[in-house]
Image 1 (spheres, rainbow, N blue to C red):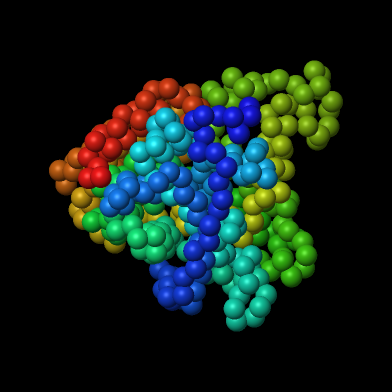
Image 2: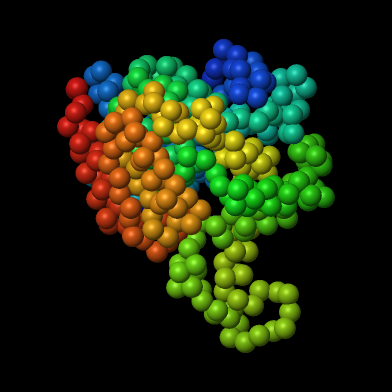
Length: 382
């Protein structure tokens, strides 16, 4: 598709960099003296800046949410099917902001950035960050942009955890939260998948204790395995069966350890692609942020108490075949919100794709999001 000719695209976009000199004390107790955040914006702020929408990204995404780069038209934003003129999140009505999280590898300060104390890349010395830390930095970015309150904060998966955390940390600073394909914390099984992925990276001989930049190498083998493990969890069994089944790559068994089944070819392709652009130290930190997220922990495991500060209206969406963040986990969030008599809309979408469904084109899902943003637009003050 020629993205440059798409009337529903936000068009060519340019990333921006925000610099912060105020020290940031992280949940771990570590302090960053300063940092930078890469971000992009689409659409125009209205007179009183009440139409701003923050999009929080999931594990391997970034601030490049919609549109394309003029020098690389094939590099299309990861949620471009949802955001743009006339799309469910209509940039003719809203000003959308995407941010690369602190610790990322797409322009924000992270493990590959220079450590001011040494002049070398931070590497393993870059502190672990949490969902709450990310939300704090996003709020600081909003301050820098003059945005006092977001019309909405939304995300899917890990991005949805950030949206949920916004409603607790800064309840007065958003009107709506769209919490898509989410869970209030990770199950033991999900933490286990993340640990297998991390061990694949850490035990790669090229990891060098996280200081591989100084050795001019990268733990590519470990990162490839980590991606394969993760990708398996993003798809449902039915989706894998319909896409690949037991199809053989060459039409017959070769009795070897090379690629024989189409699913093997697919996983290796995804792993190769991912290891070319993603940083292993960032992967380690993002999976830990996933593991650590548990707002109910500070309230004796009571999610209702954890969500008591929230005043936003909510759209919560789950997908029937998402076994990583199943509908049952979304219903935990719904119950806690209803316990607090919050305004909640919940939809459980029947979709075959598994966890990745929140990224894909599903007419019912997109109609739902569009209708919800119509409601938000109707309530804008300017």
